[in-house]
Image (tube, rainbow, N blue to C red):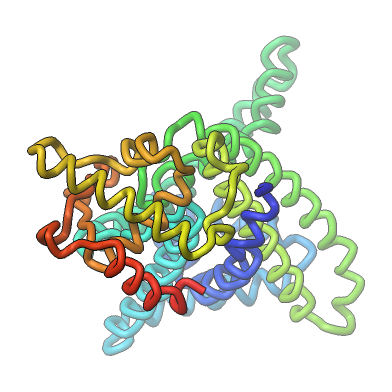
Length: 366
């Protein structure tokens, strides 16, 4: 299986489209949070200037969006709309974050979702940290730009500061993607697996940003016909391409961490009897190990024992839990490694019964 085959099998392009819709729905509430926090830090003027510069070729669209955001902030302070507005804002933003987690978990083949407590704490933390990071990074950019203006005439320092200013967007995007690849999937991701994909995605994102900004100058000729509406299809294109870059990097991160198993027979390539045989081997292995009073096996230990690729072992372990043959022992911590033990008395286990249970699952797996 190649990287592109895995991207196609996991429907990354379709997932990017779904995330584009979720992002569009949550765009104004997210910008409202950013503007509100920026005002708290005293950076509202700079954030607005940055936003207008990003849409410099579409000033009408920039004015319209900023008008939406300001109206949103004003109305959320009044009466009944205060509660409804905040609920809608939280719902759209949290739905977006939830969809992002589902997309990353699908790429990493993670079936177990965060608990309700961890979902609330992780999402709310991310919701409030993200605008603060945007505001602080914008403030740093303004400070560095002012420093460059003052030191521009100095022979040695001026060029260095100018280079750092040009490099900073690439660094910020790379750090953002690396952190996203590390913490968004509900599984343990190694730093070495997320770093290079994060850098590649960050560079691709910034290059695409430059292309997109330059293309806005070209499409400004259509303003006479479409007015501010001309920005909408190109904005959707930007969102779609951005999510493709993001999810492509996540897929590359998964590939790096599972490189030894990646280019192997896919789970879909196994026939039904092979699935039953390998699953029965796993059941016997886990049951005998548990009967001896040993610590339950992890999925990596099971993978090493049966000598099968991790992607196949993960899927079969999930199916064995669905038919109540195995149970997963975990403490719901992101870095915690799940262990597996028999879900019931081993006297109830038989290969024939397992085959019957898997036959019932087969339409669901198709």
